[in-house]
Length: 500
Image 1 (cartoon, rainbow, N blue to C red):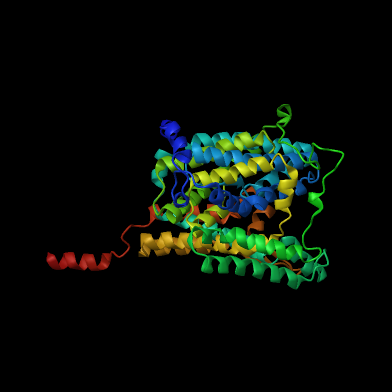
Image 2: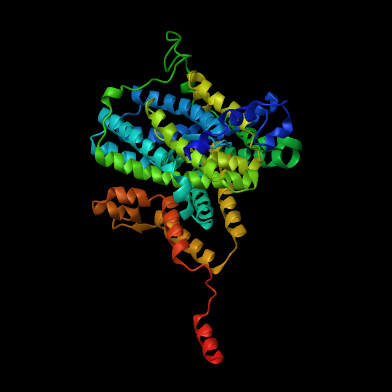
């Protein structure tokens, strides 16, 4: 696999930049597109994942007591920088597909468990980063052998994984559409938003955003109809800016006395103090297991991207490259303080919607990510876009991923075996992650919380990932169940008796 990934490397890179720039190349993997097309379509990919790229960092660092510190600031810059660099690596060397990578949500529960187990603070920071280095190296090496272990994965499994990824994103998209988790929590607890903005304004902005995206795709003709996501975000942002208090502009304030720094015009990713890294056995093992989950998700994302954008299955070389460089990018990213970086489902949704698969175009978007990591005001401007605006477009993208999974399953055929695999995978694999119990005080809790009470919190964290659950169930059933489930054994036995 290693030789296959680097075979014809020079030619693979040239394909991205060769030939005259033509707008029709937007729907082709190779060739350049005019910058007037490449810039908006490339930035559309960036806007879809920008906020989500740092959200896992905010969640983990807030729990371990590091949010607001330099550790968090430079982790965010590192995540932004490596999202751009990692995407370029995937475009030119790894999968050589229009893959966009960003900070993975898969690791959040495990990192919270690891961080709290060592007392939080700086110890948590360097323990988590140490486990990422080990886990990323493990994922890279493991992925290089995809040619062999990939044979165990029957076609129905990636299709179910794609569906699982779409299902896992539905709650996130719906939460963002209705204002984001923080706004929803404020309204439920106090009856109003902390900003003082009437809650119905958030619903109006979400509706304006999604309606703008839909109308643009209906009435605009040609290639420009495919930038409906970025148009919806622009219109939604303008409307939200017209509502006092909805947009937080504090991040755009520049310290005139500090040209360089997180509050200045220029800053840059910092390499961590590697002498403080902590490599503890249990955290390294747990993170490595999570990387297996990330590998499963990457298989689903890559399969969905090829199915929806290229109308074919990914090759073993493309899958192997995507998986290996996800691990590699995560290991390198940890040296900049970033959490693991993997393929982003949001961008798979964009491909499913627009059919834009041009690598040069995504390269332009990735370059914007790298540039933004050196200019905090640019990044802070993007971060100022309210959740409700992003949610107005994400419901389209996230739903598209689930639909791609359904379509893939349908193309494989609704045999009795496939129906049974899909049914059990959804009900048990996905159902377990949304199952709740009502406690004596009237509150509700997730059923997987039972494992925490049994001292198996790490297992509960793993089982809370529906993609992993659905993968494990589907791969076991795909081998355990007979291919032809229409066989009537009793009828066959009687027929043989009659013949005798």
